[in-house]
Image (cartoon, rainbow, N blue to C red; front, top):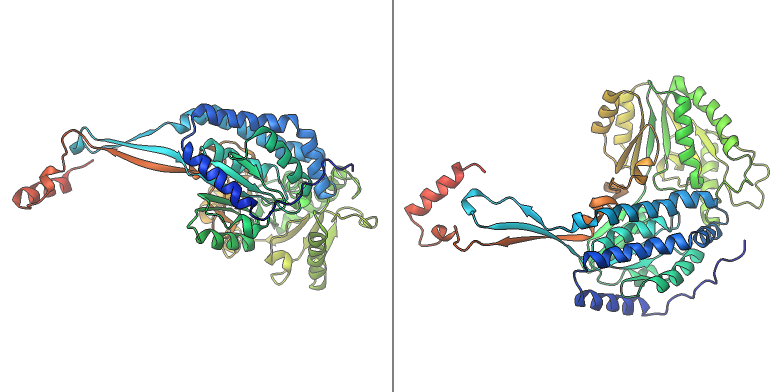
Amino acid sequence: MEKVVEHTRSVSIGKVESVFKLQKDAFNRSPYPSLQERLESLKKLEQLILENQKSIAKAISEDFGNRAIQETKIAEIYGCIEEIRYTRKRLKKWMKIQKRHVPLLLRGVKNRVLPQPKGVVAIVTPWNYPLLLSVGPLVSAISAGNRCMIKMAANSRALSALLHQLFNRFFSEDLVAILPGVSATEFTAQAYDHMIFTGSGKVGKVVMRRAADHLTPVTLELGGKSPAIICGDFDENIAAERILSSKFFNAGQTCVAPDYLLIPEEKLSGFLESAKRLVPKWYPSLNSEDYTSIVDEKAFNRLNTCLTDALEKGATVLPLLDVENNKGLQKIAPTLVLNPTEDMSLLREEIFGPILPILTYRNLSDTIDYINSKDRPLALYIFSSSGDVQEKIIKSTMSGGVCINDCAMHVSQADLPFGGIGASGMGQYHAYEGFLEFSKLRPIFTQAKKSAAVPLRPPYGQRFDKIFNFLLRFKL
């Protein structure tokens, strides 16, 4: 593929610090951007993406080796545009100062909450959805009135270079800055007012330690092993189409991809037949341009090692495409793994590739116990037509999000927050909750002309006791 843009040189030593100071000074001069200023920034961001969507998609495909342009369009470009438009339409309401309850005994007092910008926000972005996972947090942060510095992944060289040029054209560096090639150590060393990191739990812990040096609040969007459960009342053929299309989208390199499947024993054969029929229909061969490459050699080798480990320990490995013509391709065939055991790396680590281990079960309660014995996942997928069964599973487990009778669709809903819990992350963005995540909810108390607190001041005596006892009996 023709190079989309010449890769920008890495930023010089000290550039991060200088941009941070530039943004901090700009924020101090204008700590509360108006509604019109924020809407204008969102409008520019939308324009940047729409006018350059073809170049963006090509750059992402270049970074992957191959990724279907259509996958980028629907998952990243459309996802970004929808969120921008949703936010612009509602931002005026979100910014309004909120009136809060005042006790009857404090008549004349005003209680209010004002959402205020935090300051300079650092956004650390992964390579798997590099546009969406840069722009998504950016929309939440700038709608809240912040200034943003973005560090993209080393694997996103072409896109990082392109976005660096585009953002310099559309935005001043004191508002939004993309810094290509900067080291994570230098980038996370600044005293940001908020930091959001998307990536692995291992690196997330490092980011938290760096943030602790400045007591910087952190949002972590991590991953984990998101289970899909097919219940006894649900058609396994319908479930197969929805689970597998989500799993093999972007070759499984998705933080909310179903990581393993739990299915009743009697439904396994039907699921497998559907898988063998569907996948070759979607991807006639590994050479298909619709099927995404594994991002780099390290990830490719790791996934092959996981498959070898499963084979050596007795699992049945079932590729759903012909792997004979895989020479020279950095692609892993869509693969099912039957009879996996707990000592296999596929069940111990997040897979992040087009491999789906399948576990059978007889009792739903045992399945719930199994899920609860693991780290809390980023997503939980429940396939059941019974509201009672859905409610039982939801209330008996914990995950970042839940999707019923499909996979990953909850992430694409503009009015739902997105975030993990425990090992899958902390905090959230998207929707109103994203606006709040990057805002300081500042409580404001305004005293009345005459303070009701005067009788409670010293010297204390019987009058204080009477008032205090009355307050204890008084109902708000």
